[in-house]
Length: 507
Image (cartoon, rainbow, N blue to C red; front, top):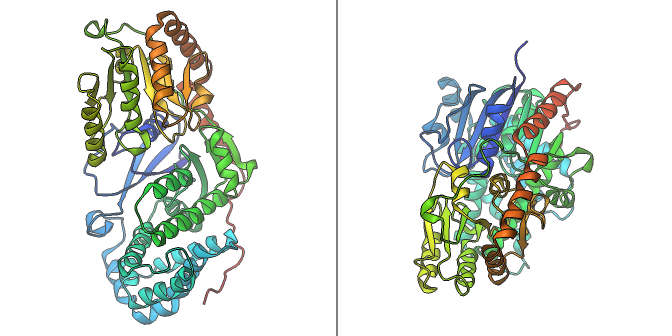
C-alpha cells in the first residue's frame, strides 16, 4: 500500500526561511514515520534554495511567490500543458469574464462587507471560483475592465458613510491589487492528490487546501501556532494604512479565518490560548486538539557557560528582529538592568535584516540609551543549543506568540526564562521556571532580569525545574507520536467532508 500523503501548506516559513514554524515543520517532516509529505510553500518572492536539508519523507516542493513583479508561473512550471495554458488565455474573453466570473467576484466582495454572513456561501463562492479557473486564465480575468468596474461599484455601496468615505483612487487601486495577490493560488489548480491538506495558519494559504478538498475530497487539518487573525489585527491596527484599506484587509482576513475553521476537520493548537480566538471566529470546539511543541532533550541539555562570558552577567535571546518580537522593549529593559548591573550583556541571535528599517530603529535606541557596550545583535546562528548556554538567563519580549520554541529550548538547557505573558508561554513557563511579565513593560521585565542575575541560587533552582518540566511535557518524541496519531485517525476514518450540497446563483 502507498504511504498516506500530506500536503503541508506554509507561508513565509519552511523550507526557505527560519523561525519557530519552520523548526516545527522540520521536526514533523523528519520524524513522522510512513507519511509522504509534499510542501506547498507560499512566499513573498521567488526563493532559489532551501535553508534546510530536506528529509527523504518530502517527495515534492511546490513554491508560489505572491508578490513578484511577474506571475508565479513565469518562474515555475506547475505541470500544466503548454497548449492548455495558451488555450485558457484565448478562452478568457470579456464576455466570459462578464458572464461567468463577475457574479462570483461580486458575491465575494458583498460577502466580505456583509454583516450577516453565512459561511457556507463563502465556501460555495470559492468552489465556483476554483471551477472557473480550471478553464480560464487568472491574470486575463482580473485585468478585465469588468472586474474594475464591478469592484468600484460594489465597494461604493459599502464605504459611503464610513469614517473615511473619501477613499482615494490610489487606495482603491491598492485594495484590488491586494485581492489579486491573495487569490493567486487559485491560478495554481494543478496540485497533487493527497489524503490530508495540513495548514499551518488559518489565513489565505487556505486556498490550496480548498482546491484539494473540492478536487479530490481531501481532508483539511489546521495547526494554529500564533492565531492568524489576532496577529493580522495587531499588524493592521499599528499600520498607517487609511481606513478604507484597513477595513478591507480586516474584513477579508476575518472571512478567510472563519472559512478555515469551518472547513477544517481537525483544529490543532499549540496552546489553549488560541482556542478562545478560534471560538470567537466560529470554530467548533469538537474539532479542537492541543499538541504542544517538543524538543530533543538530548540536544537541548545543561552545559557549561563559555569561559569568555563566565564573569559577565549575560542575557541571551533567540529572536528574528521585527516588530512582533518587540526588540525595542528588550532594549529598554537592558537600560533598566544596567542601573543595577553596569556590565550586563544582552546578546540577540537571529535574522536582523528581515525588516531593515526596524533594525535601524533598534540600533538608534541602543545609541540613544548609551547601551553600545551592553546590547549586541549577533546575527543568525544554527546552534541554538549552544547559544542558550552562553546566558545566565534567556529573554523573550514578544507581543504575540503561539507556543514559542525558544522558551522550551532554553528550559531544556536548564536556563531560566524571563518572558512576556503572551500566547501559550504560561503553559510552559510557570513561576518555578522563570518569570512572565506584561508585554511592553520594560520596567517589570528589567526588574525580573535583575532579580535573576543577582540571585545565583534562584537561577539554579529555576533552571533545574525548567529542565524537569520539559522532560515531563515537551519532548520531541511526545510531539511526534501525537501527530502520527492524528494523521492515522484522519486517513483511516471513513468518508470526506465536502460541505457543498448546493450550487448558489450569485448573478
